[in-house]
Image 1 (cartoon, helix red, strand yellow):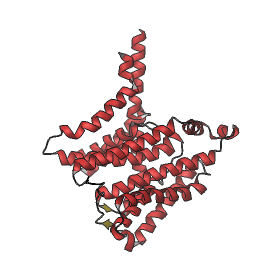
Image 2 (tube, rainbow, N blue to C red; image 1 turned 30 degrees about the vertical axis):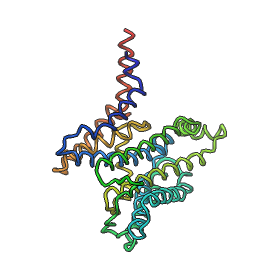
Image 3 (cartoon, helix red, strand yellow; image 1 turned 90 degrees about the vertical axis):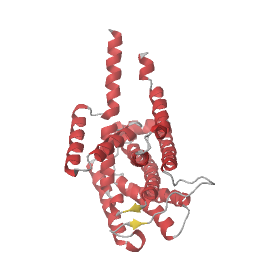
Image 4 (tube, rainbow, N blue to C red; image 1 turned 45 degrees about the horizontal axis):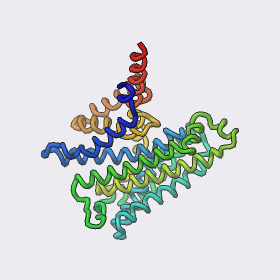
Length: 323
């Protein structure tokens, strides 16, 4: 019974089933708001998934993730708003643009280690935001880009309703998780785990660590860009803050809360923090205080995040069964 309770596959199936049936049991009066909030959590989860790939698995803390997310968002939005491009084509171009920017950032910065890499990636992000603010005709400047059209229909299926938008974003999130899951359980994932633990040892056994880091960073950038493209279409408006390094820092906080290096942690963290933020939004100072307090307590008592709590429960149950 304990093994059944602790089965990862069981938890995965239960989690997927919950996300699929969640809209069907919502009260009618608050259903639109809860679907909006859930969709926003999924979009933040996409950013966390991209950061988790380069940081959680490869051990490279990038603060350019917000800029890569914003690059995909702005490129897709500019194509749809100014040039009338179909969203799905703009969506792919946004991901490609973020991947190319990841290549440009990664080649010089991934040669650095530790805080130097963090500082350089944040510097690239600051430059990107400055460019967005000064390209007013394309990006809307500091005012922001308004009137971003919603997701285009696929055949006869439109996504104007909140519930259809919810399922669309959820399906794309499932694809993100599947990609990361396949990477984690491949030879590449084994190399990334070794790279995270000891880069010098990896080099000594013949692993091209620079190529491995760059490859991972590009994939992470593409995922961030695709998530950003969907984010811009979902909100209908973008501002320079949607491409700032603060987004990447917020995603890092969400990952710490949920559990770094875990797939469930990429959604548990955003869900907890966004729900707390929503509940406390009437008093901003208290909301910030609560977020900071929760983060401190988690770092002290649950350094592996909420997902790490299941590990403690598992160990306790095993010890209890042995007795």
